[in-house]
Image (cartoon, rainbow, N blue to C red; front, side, top):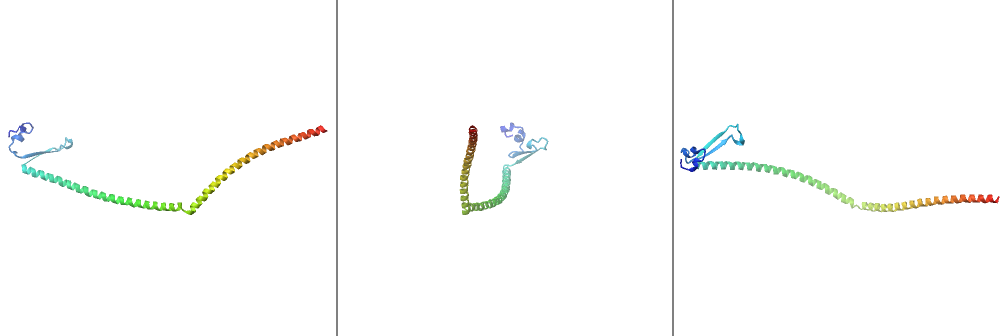
Length: 183
């Protein structure tokens, strides 16, 4: 080996330090089949050893491929977003048309109401109605007062008639008594 102390603290000491076939090579290990804790999956281990210039080229290619994948993903997202934006614009335009239609309908009805509410004939009729209502209320109060007075007068008349009847009866008795005394 090269006498590096790191050569003797790992499981792969011979392969890393004492094997001169891989001297000055950069080796990587890739394992497959162990993802997600799969116990029954087929497992493979790949060893790749490259010279430093090949390693830099390989890293640059992988980086480039990742960036191309990212670019393609962003392009797809951009296309999807453009499609979503167009759909949202279409939906918004439809909703805007519906809103404007409702607003025009509301505005028309508000104008009709305003014209009808401020109509001179309606205002005159409303004034007459309010005056008639006032007259009715006053007349109704007068009627109730007159009915109350009539009831009181009838009761007093009934009492007076009873008193008169009683007086007439007493007079008749008195006249009979006087006739009997004379005879």
